[in-house]
Image (cartoon, rainbow, N blue to C red; front, side, top):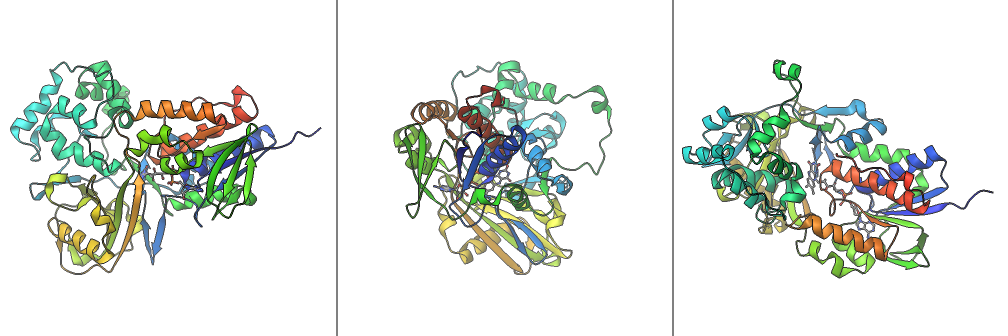
Amino acid sequence: MKSEARRVAIIGGGITGLSTAFHLHQQKNKGQLPLEFSLLESEPRLGGKIKTLRHGAFLIEAGPDSFHIKGKSLLDLIQAAGLGHTLIRSNTGQAFVFAKDALYPIPAGMVMGVPTKLMPFLKSGLFSPAGKLRAALELLYKHNVAVDDESVDSFFRRHFGSELVDRLIEPLFSAIYAESTERLSAHATMPHMVALQKSHQSLILGMRRSQAGPEQNKRAPRRDKTPGPFTSLDRGLESLVAAIEDLLPPSSVMRNTTVTRIQEIAGRYRLTLRGNDTLDVDAVVLTAPGESAASLLGMPASFSPLQESPPASVANVVLAFRQDAIKIHNPGTGFIVPRNAGCAITACTWSHLKWPHTTPKGYALLRCYVGRPGDDAIVNADDHLIVQTVLHDLKRVMAINDAPEFHVVTRWRNAMPRYAVGHLVHMAKLTESVATRFPGVVLAGASYGGIGLSECVRQGEDAAHATLAHIFARPSLLKKSRQC
Ligand SMILES: Cc1cc2nc3c(=O)[nH]c(=O)nc-3n(C[C@H](O)[C@H](O)[C@H](O)COP(=O)(O)OP(=O)(O)OC[C@H]3O[C@@H](n4cnc5c(N)ncnc54)[C@H](O)[C@@H]3O)c2cc1C
């Protein structure tokens, strides 16, 4: 007798939901499982924050533009989706910090602000002699290991002093998390550094030892054309969204479908959809952001620690110039801007240099961000004001003698989850209370277990396996969580 199919709803068609759908589909086929699933997305398009635009021959990433080459979960998904041949590595090149009204190269060997190579760090003009001495003393100090979570700011200030934090670490972390380092959780955003502190006391020592590879790697000569550590897709990241969708059964994808409520009814779940249709399922993977998930489940108190740090807003501002309209004095991949530099822009990528496939010959493509932690009013300004503000800042850094050929401003309101100090503890409690009250409902996505694309893909995969183990009561379908 054929058993009745189990139904799963995946709420949210961003990369986390797509990863869940892909892995459910794969496991269903592999194990001949009686399974139906629906991917419910409120917008007319899938992809969530992944948004690739085309403007003539320009390829513009309005959301994420790349991921680290170590992002194994995402690399695996890209291969499985048949896009391995479109993977593209960034050009290597110098990255800069705009400080003291000039561009300073980030010294070679800095890894998330940790100076793993002392000579380039000591020679850098970005730091004062006193700042360098204070940072180098990190090798000698015994650092008290904080048992509980702490801020990224206090963690690094203890190790390296103020100057390294203010001039390099703060802008690096703010560019990734759009959150002030004073509020950002060290445990949630850089567990490897916390582990290195525990094992080595000194981050410099720990980093150097963990980076030391096999003997032949150490001796291998560095080639000039070694690609950079970032990876993307030559047709844009949204090509992954389309490739995954093509692999899913067409009936499983429901766009323009907003879920407004999740109710538990006799061990199953009834989803109310906007327009009052309903969908009954056995399990739910909830990839919507924290605020939306809290209201869908009617559990505002359990989600309140997440809501105390509402997601940050930023705007992505892309400007295209004729090549001869701008002069970059120190070419490289781009620059970051500390908050005390008096600029609205927080970071700028020279996309035509870092990602040459994005820009036709004879043009330059600049990709900037505005919107700082606690100061995101600029995100709500009109396009003209945003572009003029960005141009004003850029002219402090490079020569610009003509107007841009075109611009694209993309506002991302309440889009960047902010992992405040205590995030991991809050998440453990939240996961437990959701599992207790709504067994079979799994939270996954940027609000919860990591904001990077690869971390979202890994969460989606883990959620798929947890869901299968639940609905088929087969723990063997659970997959051990992997590092991404
Ligand atoms: C501007 C920007 C730049 C970034 N750059 C990078 C980068 O370079 N590299 C990197 O690794 N990461 C980057 N990130 C982070 C990364 O892009 C995101 O963390 C990731 O894409 C989030 O994926 P997600 O599926 O968890 O969430 P989302 O992409 O937000 O998807 C959630 C989906 O759920 C839908 N939804 C919400 N509520 C409901 C509901 N009730 N019913 C139905 N659907 C619903 C939403 O419409 C949305 O499509 C960047 C993020 C931003 C905003």
